[in-house]
Image 1: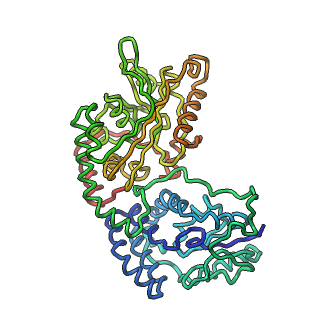
Image 2: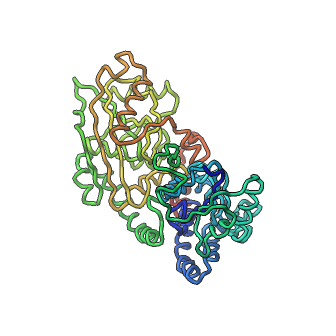
Image 3: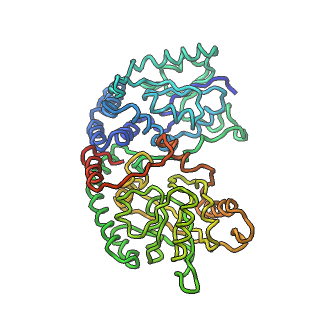
Length: 501
């Protein structure tokens, strides 16, 4: 095992050397659609500079257009919540195996350090990150410039190693002109360049100490695909079409009876895949059941109602007023006060079926958050339902953005697909009636739903998600709804700032 390894990020730890799409993500998520379009319009000039051997100038132009005038706190937030997922999807596992075999790990990049540091330290387990530094004015806004030229990165690596008191034993990177690897590799005793052989001597196939990067459990941002220049152009072309399509789909859902929606939805490109056998509707001799669903998007209870062809009320925590207005099903707003919420749920179950998502918030990745045990205390008629979805362009959830846009973004996708899997109603011996604790019942339901979807169970909660993605607990203080004020605020958010996320 080497003592120190220094690795280039782009083109080495990441498969691709082109980082333009990461600046597109920053432009869209930290600023909005206008900056996203401006950066895309700058791409031909950036590419031309690269072809002419002025790649550093092209990178500086990308940094300027993506960050100039943006609050540094917004850049940090987008970096924390959005970029790790895309970085991880592009990670070169062969390079990672070599990188992770060393005790001390250093990541080097020409990108601004703020865009890389969180991912490198939390997911790649790096000890230090060396990169360019964004200039920030006294108002907390990024100027778009970097503090020093990229050539100083090699000097920073050398200083870091001298402070550590050890010479770098292994360097990973490219020696091509313009790559950051050419700046620090001369400092290394041993060099390794991509592609990396699977049987590289520092990692053997049977070395069980080789571990995978930490997975991304919480992920935010509206874009579902990596915005390469071609993909970004396609997104910009599709947005006006998608808005019109979303308006039509939402109108159809509000106007038509629930039994007709499954027949009409395929006409507009939506598809629902149903597995399992749903329970019969409640009757005089058959009281309502509690549908316990995994929580993927705001649309979970609506899709479930359309499958069952009847409007089933759903309990909610922090759904926006706009979403409640356009919802085709009744909603029961909970207070997060256990006794009050228990009374509301019992009262609703006496009337008929009810939908609950015990995770308390959505999770995009293949993980289930911890289930609240409240539902297990209130009824023994529990039907687990595994919900999952697939979209092409836009995610239908957000932790940092405006939640009222969630249903609009979902229906803006060309062909959204939902998968609904009904599991058997829990037997009596698996409920609290047999003496099991509510937590045991909730954990059992979480496990069987995770097994059905091929997901992993976690102990993370809503608070954990919002602390990671938004830096808060995800609790919005109650306020009196003012229609005029809400309308003005909606206009400001959608039209004034084009903050689509």
